[in-house]
Structure formats: C-alpha cells, structure tokens
Image (cartoon, rainbow, N blue to C red; front, side, top):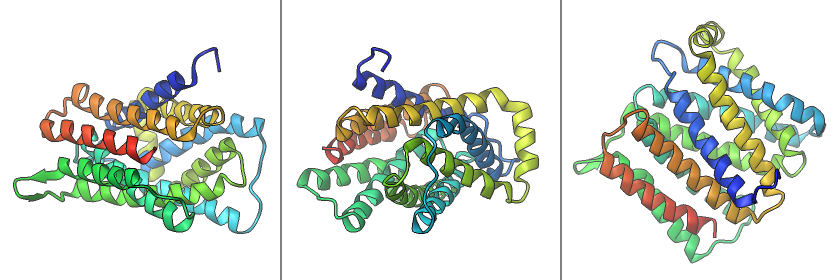
Length: 282
C-alpha cells in the first residue's frame, strides 16, 4: 500500500484515530446537546464511507443480519452520546484511559459468544488493562465516580455491545459497507433526538473545520485499518493500532489540551494499559 510497510501504516492510522476524539473534545460545549455532536460525527462519517461503499457495493441480507447491524449502529450512537457527555466535565485523557475497559467486555463476550480461546497471558492482560483504566479515577482511598466517569463507563458498555455485534456483521458484509451502514444508522437515529439538528447547525457554523478534521482523521484511520488487516497478522496489527490510539489520545490531551491534573495516575495508567493491550493481543 503506497510502498509503505504495513506496520508503519498501522502506526499512522492509530495516530489518526487517537487524534480524532481529542480534536472533537476541543469543540464540545456544555450548552449544546450531546446528540448534536453524535449527529455531526455520524453524518460526516456517512458521507466519507458512501463512495467506498458504492465502490464495493454490498447490501447486508435480510433477517438477523440486519438486526445485528441495527445493534451496531444503536450501540455506537449511545456510546458517542455518553462519550460527549463525559467530555463536557472530564479530561479527554481520562475518558480515553477508562475507554480501555471495553477490551475486558469484548474479551468476555468473545469468550462466551464466539467460543474464543483464552490464555494466562490474556488473563494478565485483562488485569493490567483494568487496573490501568481504573487507577486514573482513584482519589484518596476510594474511586471517584463523577458524572463524567459514569458516562465514560456507560460508553464502555455500549462500545463493547457494538463491537461484539460488529464481529457478526463483518461475517456477511464488506468492511466499507459495515462502516457506511453503521454510521448511517447512527445518523438517522440521532436526527430524531430533541434539539439535535438545531444544535448541530450551530456547532458546524462555529467549528466546521475542527469537526471535518476529526471526522476525516477517524474515518481514514478506520478505513485504512480495514485494508491493513487484510494483509497482516490481526493480533500484531491491533497491538500497534491500539497502542498508538492510547499514546496519541492521552498524550495530546495532556500536552495540547493542558490536562495536567492526575498526571502521575495518567502515566501509570498508560503503562499498565499498554502492557495489557500487548498481552491481550498475543
């Protein structure tokens, strides 16, 4: 692909993915409904995936397949809504560390739903990821479950549901059709939410450049990953991709958004989560 090694492309796409939520966080304002941001993200992503979908035309079959696709779209819509709500009161670097907990839920889902094998390395990976995600919300002698953290945890739950249903969807359609339909479903559902369209218009008038940049960054990363996975070892590629998402997202949150609170906890969380990701992907 473009004469560049696949691992290097995984690094680039992971950076782009990690960049997207940080840029999006920079335009989140409390006065706008979170549904508006969900609508913007889904609408722009749908436009991006449309030509790719047309090029590899593939409409999912009727029946249970489309039900899974609806679960994917609805799950991601709710996850994006909760993430935006979390961004209103909580550092992006904290939200992205807590988001690693979705790896635990998808692991157990894969174990019981897809009969995937588990090893001692994966168990240790789960433990490291869980501790790394939770250390950032430890204050004094207890966990601080603020409103932002609760929304982050809800987002983790919905992401896991969407990812598990997504595994089923990808068995019967192309990655680009999956990307288009999952984003289009989000868009249609979000359009029906109170105040979503008026607030989305106001946000785009103020922050169109940032919104387009975040969407392009995420969509290019997602589409690029789908291509790279077709030519590489899945486990190795996901290690590189997830590590770069974490490093980029948390790093930019600290440096660019100046999220310097709980710094030692964030650094500890990064190291533990990186170790967990590597073990889980082994």
